[in-house]
Image (cartoon, rainbow, N blue to C red; front, side):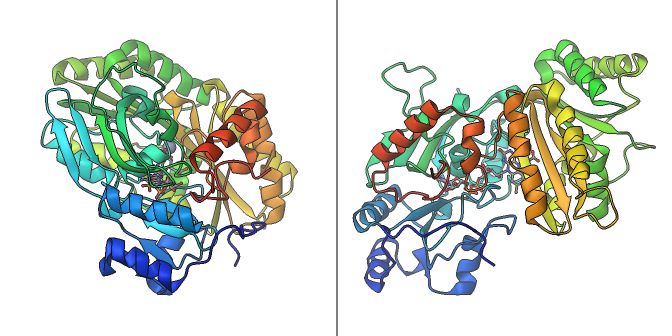
Length: 486
Ligand code: FAD
Ligand code: S2G
Ligand code: ZN
């Protein structure tokens, strides 16, 4: 099945030859590449959702920045298209080839370069897996400033390339703030060494910011310098059951007042998400009955007694005020993990459905659930949801309330044109009308690039295209993605 309908291969790009492969072998060695074997190539040509599939014949796994530079210099001269690839957990089709682009996978660059334990500044290769870095830091009393369900596979380089948000953004901010420096290889092979470890440096344009969220379209990130926070000694996690999204908002507002500096995460999901999870996994029951909405609150502080007291007072207030119908505090590490694995498990559960339309949108918090209910009604009016034989089986909502970030997932028996044309561009128009973004944290890839105009003006898009042509004049890095084709 053509997984990229409507795309035409850009014939300015050369087709791979045996000589090219021989040259690459001279750079990365026999074990540094996979060539021609369909089975071995499959995982690198298919995205995490198994929704997008490329036809690359060659995967390169360089071990050093110099090897990346030599590879790109050659590809640029030869006009060979290249897809930079990290853990391949991206959800917008950005990490796999559209046609036969060469896959440049960073898994071979996984060394920790240094750590300043006074300021908590970590320097590492881009191909380090997020969870590996987090575990390494834990022994030193530090942690990564971001956490996402894909931590076991995603690379810090991929996180930066997609400007990943995740579960800790509310407390530790975005990678635009925590990344202090980057080492990037430009499309022509130039090595840009901006591996600064300074928190303050106002000398010229802040070039590293260009590459944060650039999704492999203007450079390959090979090294990162990132500010890591202390790992809190006292961590609590509580689960609330609520009747309405208005109550979710009240709980959020009150958590900022009462928990304030120790609040480290505030996630929500609806009963549809819980039931979707239960359809594919068995969570350890935490509450006697089910509620229309749930909130997971995490606090991270330095004094357990102080934090316990604050959190319990907050929960009592929420119950007394009728904002929460039920509330439980995890009593130990395994209960904390159980609650987080529920929240992180929705993606995997949805991945077991026959088909899912995934939307990662941000908007003013009060609008979040209006969007969900409006979409349900719109699909019912369109005749694709609400009946026994409807193609759409459920509309599921969860996300990072504090970031105004909704993950709207529409589960279906199959992907069909009638449903997708009911959803798009209707949803993007809805988001744009409510001053939201059509992609809050997952990026654009090939899934959202044609809709960029719903979130960015023509002037901004034109400037982005000018930047792309300055930095990648032959257009070899991650072609067909990120920017609209017209
Ligand atoms: P890949 O998927 O390999 O690549 C992603 C993009 O970055 C591609 O365009 C690729 O070309 C580019 N790229 C990769 N490495 C480099 C590099 N070194 N230099 C230049 N470009 C590069 N995302 C969130 O933001 N928040 C979440 O909470 C979240 N939760 C997730 C949960 C699950 C279960 C899954 C499967 C995904 C989730 N994601 C989330 C999406 C995904 O994990 C992130 O986008 C992640 O940052 C991708 O990292 P990666 O290493 O897998 O990159
Ligand atoms: C999350 C994961 C992707 C999705 O769980 O926070 O970013 O839409 C998402 O399930
Ligand atoms: Zn998310």
